[in-house]
Length: 375
Image (cartoon, rainbow, N blue to C red; front, side, top):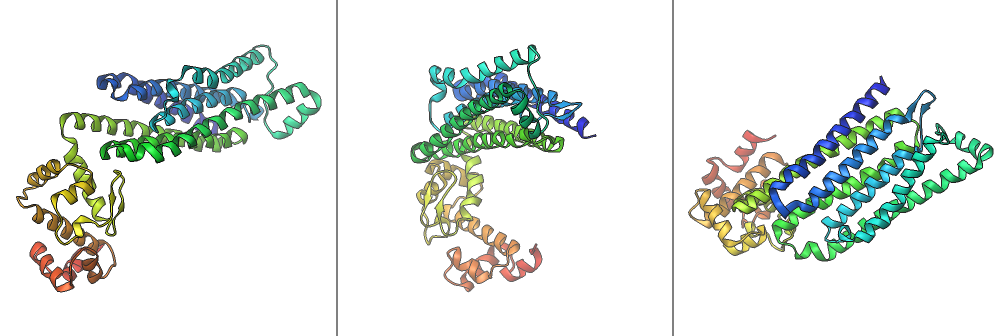
């Protein structure tokens, strides 16, 4: 049963990887240069992922589940290096444009792949099913023992190189790029950075089942890969919608609708996901201006003004008050906070003033609203 499930998850990952990678490559041509780098990496990286998954089929043998298999390690290393190159590109580094660096990082893994194929073809490849087998090789065939150890050590050096590149690029990104991007670009870029780092972490986690003779671990890991492939496909579709909305001028209303609830939840201010800093939440200020709210939301005054008009609010202050009262109502219904605390923290001078405003908006008092809507 476990063996059949293992093969099913392997086949599913292969199909998903090729589907996601080549769909992005082919479909992305419609978007021109906006995702040129993503297209190239998607095709190459996910094809290498599919090859890695395919190589895992051979680890199940009559003697058991092979550990420290050479071919999956080589292909995993190639996928890790490719992923690290894309990850650094999302963080503003241009390593992927350096041909010499590509030669440097891919030469040894490709040579290792050739060496493995030669060993396999000459029947000199000896699979391991436990670390006791490795001790036996040390005594009976020391050449194989030390050769395998050197092989793994060299490839692990390139894993460290990949991790170092990602860490350096992330530090660079946090210091420079993240503060220089426009709000909408920063929000989108952050998503790409997080996803590429997630892929790097998941690949590193793949070393655990690689070292342990357990089909269950491999199955769980294969499901994790499939989950991340699904998230990647969803993220691509979201990125496409972002680009098309941006090009058609429909991006601002989408962003405002998404960001308003997030900004309202920041009662004490702080740093937003869209790279703006809010010292005092304008929704809860005494007399917020259009400029104050637009700046906090990371949009232009014109975009916010148009959005308010689309909400059938001819008066900006009426819209602000409505958003604030909606937030208060949500807090009353879904939390155990005192009503007086909610009122003061959202900018009302006292509870009676808040109660009157709330009753005008919802027709009942805050306490009655809580009784009717408490979750």
